[in-house]
Amino acid sequence: MLEKFNYQNALILGGTGTLGKCLVKQLNTHFPALKITIFSRDEHKQALMKREYPMCKYVLGDIRDEVALFNVMTKKDLIFHVAALKHVDILESNIRESVRTNVIATMLAADTAHRLGVKNFIFSSTDKAVDPINVYGACKFLSEKYLFDLNRHQLGTKYAVYRWGNILGSQGSVIPTFINTLKTKRVV
Image 1 (tube, rainbow, N blue to C red):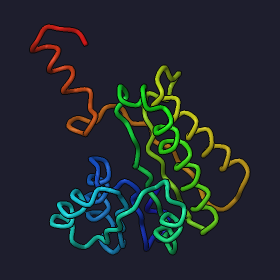
Image 2 (cartoon, rainbow, N blue to C red; image 1 turned 135 degrees about the vertical axis):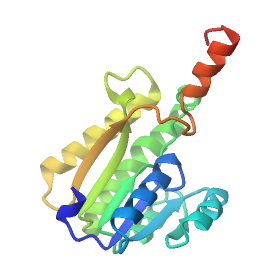
Image 3 (cartoon, rainbow, N blue to C red; image 1 turned 30 degrees about the vertical axis):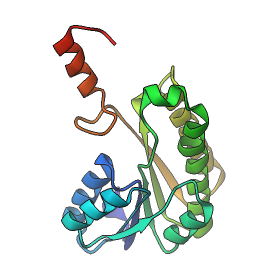
Image 4 (cartoon, rainbow, N blue to C red; image 1 turned 60 degrees about the vertical axis):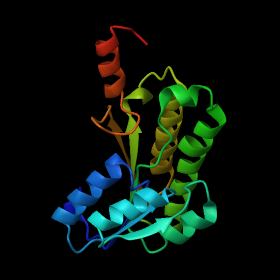
């Protein structure tokens, strides 16, 4: 998909997480001329990542902040949205925060991308969006539906959705829970 377009400025929303770091590595390898901006709210992770990827620009901010999104998205032609609250158990008792970040902020980011004429907006979803049974999956499901609806009703920005399963070693991965269950022989 990326080879078909002449991208110059990419933005990774939530770029300091596991998926964001993998994206930077791949984009830097395959598209070395691409200017990459990382947008996240974790200054510590940005400082650490900057040591490994000093060629990127780092912007501190929250995807729920409309002004910050507008400023960081200006003059970008490719956006990867990988920012999310994703700890399933925590989100079950923090529904409001999940909706604000995983649905409303996604809608805000998508609308801002369209308003600014961004060519492509790529959204990271989850396998939990298939017949969702938890808050996280339901939020991702709603975000997917919103992006698909935008594709049907406008001709500017193209929205793509990728569903991921648990990523080994990522924050919130189910793998440590599985390991702990096996060690203690106790089902959680």
